[in-house]
Image (cartoon, rainbow, N blue to C red; front, top):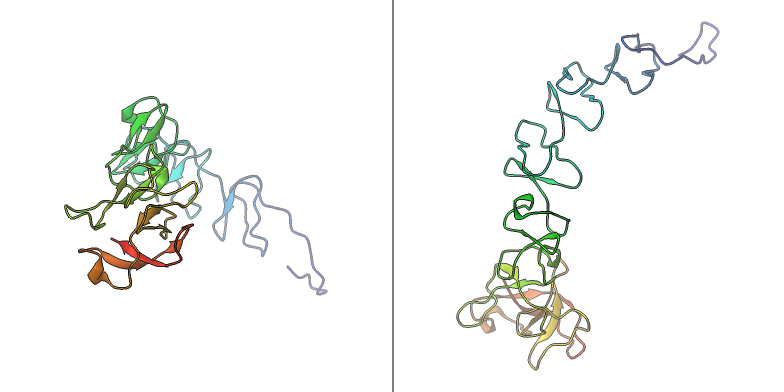
Length: 220
């Protein structure tokens, strides 16, 4: 703030419950200024509704109360959505996401299971990226005619039609190794129109192929 002579004056940070309205908005320690007073971070189950929203430790304020982060398998539906470690709040329960260490199937976010000490989604289960799958391969499911209509599921890394083609970008005759927006790499038939994709769509992809140059392939 300015003194009566117009010079700048250094103001000390205010203590808990002290006045922080004098242009500094500075509080001691981890206290938070609500515009008027310095408010202390609240303990577990303490009141955090007084304009600070500040909790001690790793607790989370749900608007009124400081709630502790919870472990895998415990409810996170009480308004905090806060889970320990790298766990995720999924359908109101803390669970271990794919690719993270686990001790049992119950730790993992559905549909993942605990495989070799890590949560993984089994072959044929829905996925978003290869990190969701034990095989590291997430690619489009095909219909009865072999067209890649989707959804994406965990598959094998065998360089076959609509399976994954990492580690070299090679695919069999008539297919190119494409990569989609989620960095999934799979062998797909090149196309210029959806009419040649048997019910799937002609999509634009990145090309990782060592045998073709097209940038459009059949996919979901």
